Amino acid sequence: MASHGVPRVSGTATSDKSVAAKEKEQRQIAEYKGLEKDVIDRIKGKDFSNDTFQATSRLLQQNPEYHTIWNHRRILLQDVFRRELASGNSAVITTQADEAHNGDVQAASKAGLTLAQQEISLLLSEDLAFLIPLLKQYPKCYWIWNHRAWLLAKATELLPVRTASQMWRGELALVSKMLVLDSRNFHAWSYRRSTVEQIELLEGKSLAEDEFAYTTKMVNTNLSNFSAWHNRGQLLPRLLHERQATDEERKTTFDAELELITRALYTDPYDQSLWFYHQYLTSTLVISSSSDANGDARRTNILAAPISHVTSIAYLEQEIASIEDMLDGAEDCKYIYQALLEYSQRLQELADGSTDIVEPSKMASWLDEVRKLDPLREGRWLDLAVSLKL
Image 1 (tube, rainbow, N blue to C red):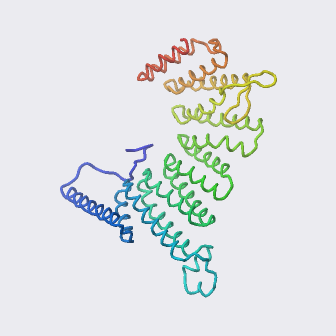
Image 2: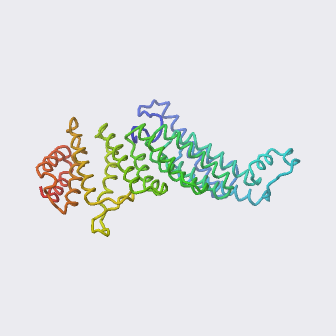
């Protein structure tokens, strides 16, 4: 199945096969079943040898969706880690004589690792490298991403902070390359967030500014990117908190984000990902109110800036007017009508249920249009008509 026009498995397949092709496929199936049985029998027999490990590699290259084999592979790796740590190679070698006689000792000493840690680091790096061709061929396979995360978690557990941080940094660079190939791969975006989180924990500093700049780059490259917009929305409150932004600075940022998404919507009002981000921003204007010392109703939006009742109404009126303008040339875009109806309903709620703040005739015409454009949701639109008293 393809997602965003990118197949789950790279390459193409054809249903028209010759007799020779079918015979070849049958041989491959028989070989695969034999290999599968060999791996399972070895694991049951607790054969944790390198031959077993290489057999799992061959099997996973043919079928990376086989999560049980990934679990077996991790058992094999953990056995190697245990044996390395129990081998007694726990001291950092520093003498020049040892370095001269042993390249491994020299490399470990230079990296500030014990011999056991050096071996574990090499094993982790080799397995990460083994996964790269698989990741290119199967970029949306959960088990490949999960195994990479497990390997790096082991680096954090078993290696010094400096070494583990370098490995996580390398992973962040890899994810960036994967997102160049498919900027909307939500597996990669989710993995990127967890990778950034681990780097922040190891290095003790925030990457929010860098990641926010990255989302700007990605949405400017491709507006239709749900994951990039989502990441941006998640980063905004944290970013402003870390900047210790004043109320005025928060409002300025909010206005800039509204301007950014409005320009994007004028470019392509048919893109649902843009409407979701616009909806996210405007939803911050209608959070439950409290009263300040002067008795004015105030609201705290998700950017943590207090916004008065009057200002909230002004923002919604501004957005409704802007969205109405988008109808020129996009009269068949249902998202526009949906947004107009949703924001008009919010506006009525802010105006204590007044139906005069938006002309009922306008709302009725918008509802008629969206019913024509989306007849499969007729029940939804009938319910909306009742709630809007149309």
